[in-house]
Length: 123
Figure 1 (cartoon, one colour):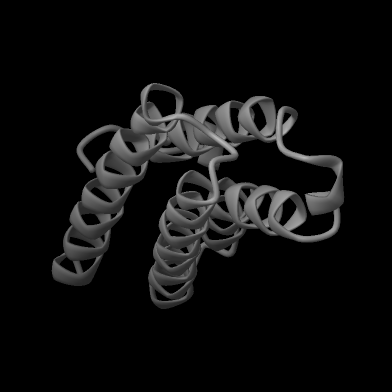
Figure 2 (cartoon, one colour):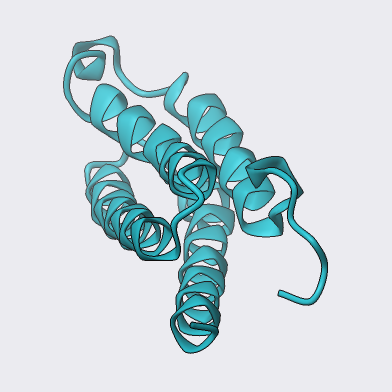
């Protein structure tokens, strides 16, 4: 992290997490109404959890805590991946619509792993 980070808003990984949240809110609008308190709610909570945990971890200003919150964000991405696979299998979303979500998830997983590695090495 060569550039000075003044806020979590400066982190590209946080910005991309927000993009993923917006994308999933949009996609889940077309899910069946009976999923309002089921899959829709779970997907939205997990999606919001990603940038939220990145923000909370960075705001704590302790490297060890930041890394812990980045791992929580990674866990939320794994939840999202699973939930989106279920939604696809149930026919709530078509492959062309969900493919960008999976690409976002993969990219964010790599970015979080890289950030965790950099923070862990830079004692």
